[in-house]
Image (tube, rainbow, N blue to C red):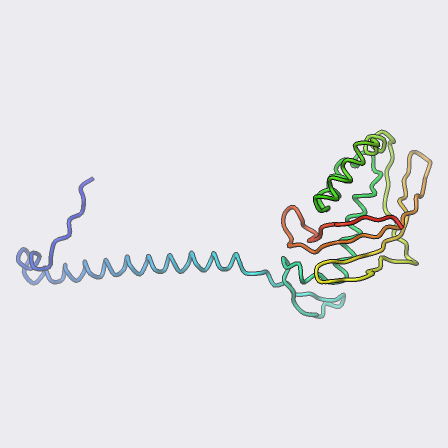
Amino acid sequence: MEKVKHIPTKELLQMHGPTGGLIARLQRYSLLGWGLAGVLLLVLVAYVFVDKLMPVPVLAVDEQGRILGQFEYLSPDSRTDNEVVAGSVAFLRHYLSANSAFVMDDYTEALNMMEESLREQKLAGVLENNYLTRIANANTVSHLDIDKEHPPEILWRREQLSMLRVRGNVVAQAGNNVVERPFDISLEMRSVPRTTLATTGFRITKVMDN
């Protein structure tokens, strides 16, 4: 491909007379247009980059649809008490699962919600006592029944750490046999930014039987 040659204004005037001046101006306008297009592209790229880094504001509403305020969806500092309680219950539904068909997936989800040191401890425990295999072979289905008389209780909150107490029963059924196993567990949780691997926005740091 032949390289485009820039002809000086003086030479254009000599070659084309007055028309050469018009051609020279068109060349300058062309260069100016390309320069402005480049600047606009840089501004657009910068805007998209900054927009992706900005926190996502989310409006909170009550049951009647009244706006209560806004919070940053990804920020670990914006977790409400209701979110903390919901996070603890979501963890226990996986952690205490006795569903034979899904216990491996459920416990994997619970492990993913734990901090690394706790995860390693719990994983070593279930591998040693064969707990997951025994549940998988029991042909049971289960659900978590949270104690309505003693609902989940936030014992304390300090910055991004929370301690909760959750009570209830794991209701497991195998055929016509139904077994209720009570639980009373305290959880220490740390608020973390929400990601694809931490959609609840929490990491469990301690699990204690009361």
